[in-house]
Image (cartoon, rainbow, N blue to C red; front, side):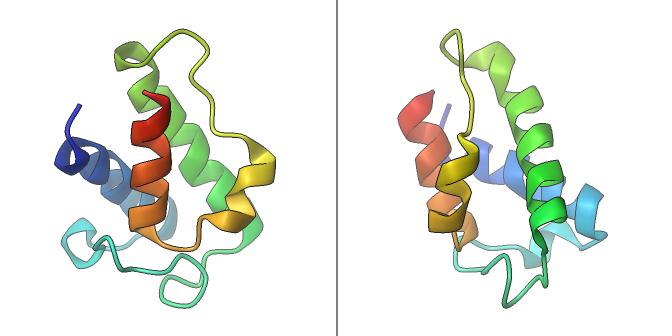
Length: 85
C-alpha cells in the first residue's frame, strides 16, 4: 500500500468516529489538539484502521495500545501503519 492509500483509510476512520470531513484531515492534523479525540475515540479509530488494513497486511498486523501515546499526528499514524504492513 502507498502512504496515500493508508492516509485515506485513516481519514475515513476519523470521519466515521469524529464526524469530520475526511478532506480536512491531513498528515499534520493532530488527534488531540486539532480533532479533540479522546482515548476512546482513538481506540475506535485504531480498530477501524486495523480492520481495513488487515486484509492487505502481514499476518498479525496490529497497532499496539502502548504505542498510541506516541502517535500524535495523522502522519505519524500513517507512517506507523506502513512500517507494520
